[in-house]
Length: 342
Image 1 (cartoon, rainbow, N blue to C red):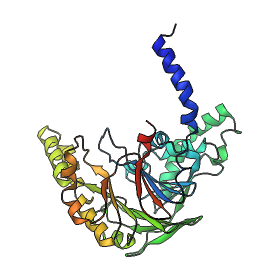
Image 2: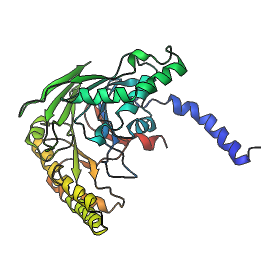
Image 3: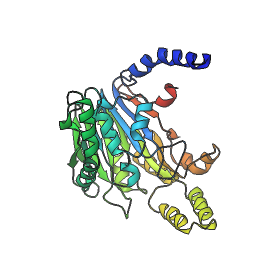
Image 4: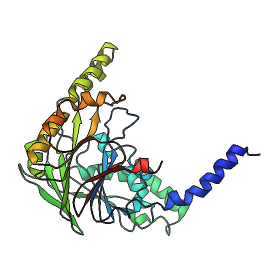
């Protein structure tokens, strides 16, 4: 027989479950452009931050930018219906940016309202990545169709469709997607020796947001971010990361220490990201792809260094679940979709 505590817990969840399932945070956002941070971390294990992923919301449509491991789970925790996902855009093919691609597609495939295969936009190489995931999930798709029937799980839309676009030239930003007033432009950034790598600019209803992808300070990004309302830029702390690398080496983990030290040469620091935002005339800056993890609140000041002195506008260290809303009427509102559902 169930204990009193168990019966109370069951009664509570029975009462709350319909409200939780029916929640639609997008419906109340209003006209404008909205950016949600799904994963604000990196490949380094971090209890607070998932692998890189963001959502751009324009009208009632959702666009996913990168899909690190855990992306689909966090999207669900944020209350976002995967059936609203219109397409997915990849900045590049590092493992922490593509590790959750199969799961995001699976959740979209079986969601209400999905009637077309998910398009995955990306620079050259996207076809190979998508083909690999489609092949890896081929047996899984067969299991689900056989179990749930084609009426509920349409095999015709289970596999992703790659949409390759050329890498823009030096100083150029090329339109790669236009949809119901949303214009998405890609521009090349500097994450060498990794390439190609692109950032994206989103323009909708007179508002704009830029997602840098992984990059050092980059003139192309500054140009593409001209007068943007929000720049979301990756950033690391050389001081903290080299401290971790040194500790690994002293512990006898020379390979890990070398790899961590190498990371410092192809990501911007927070001050350099602030420089890019200031020079672009961006109105707000959010730092993401946080390296290394910041387990103590006091480390945030070390991570930022003198970035707040280099940028005149609002500056935040992004967290998973953060929502940056750019209403068509102006202004910027910041909230957190995960905290809202606790």
